[in-house]
Length: 91
Image (cartoon, one colour):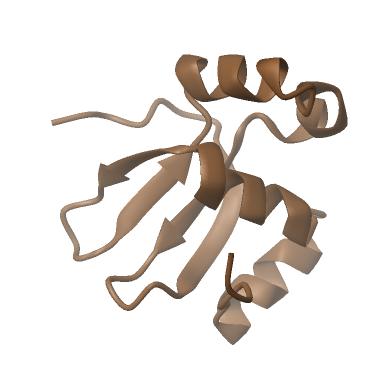
């Protein structure tokens, strides 16, 4: 995987929300993508992604961060990251 491309906003949010870069990389590698209807893509761990992580024995290391999400621009840059407290609606 190429180097993780983050905006300054995403870097600040990662630090503020205590989300390590390894979690963002796992999100981009294994997470489910849903369009946010604003030109970006929301990436999060759904049930299938959690099962993939479990098969790869990565789920223990990421247990704390299974509610994490990332918003990725069309250019491939990560715009922001956070912890979900609501459902991600799929349309």
